[in-house]
Picture 1: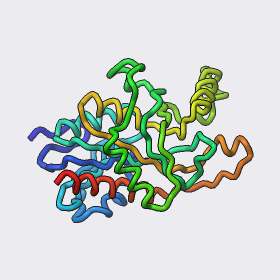
Picture 2: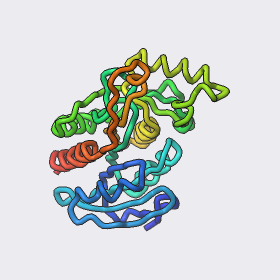
Picture 3: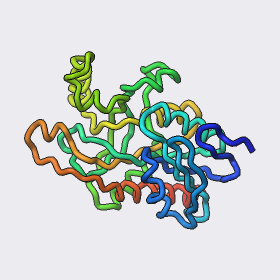
Picture 4: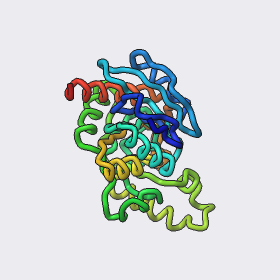
Length: 250
């Protein structure tokens, strides 16, 4: 079987479902929620473990940061037979009601990044699969965390968001940020637009659940702004959503 150049995996794994954190350091913790999890490889930013849920093989693989590496991951996972992908990651809140420690389930993403423009014009929306999203919402609510469902923003530049005033393009960055906030965007992250667009083009299913670390808009307004870097609830939601889909599809 052909081994994929970037992710270093082939179709012998037999997996159809994958849970995709950005950070390689989170892969083992996610895999520990599966049965019989084992390390299957690492190459570049892609660390991979394979385990089982309800007897079905499930891959856990990091995508690295940003759209380009995420798009490569989705392309190569498709080539080795996967059809359902869930991103489990972190984000910063944008809407005032979104607080550190909450969960966000992304229905769609603002395409403020460059990768997806090499797939389809920007008028085409970056949307999650509705069935995957429904399972994620139910699983996220079962964690007991506050859950927000809606649109998130995907960008390429972390420091363009957090220090726009020092960028030559800062005026435009700040104008667009205010536009997304005014339109009700829930949170900002870096990978979901690429995940949604590439999955859509390849006729795969994709969803996304995010842990909120903090909210710079709440801080700007002088509101209480708890900080929380515990991603365990989002991980639990992703795992249980995959389990529910496997049971539904048996």
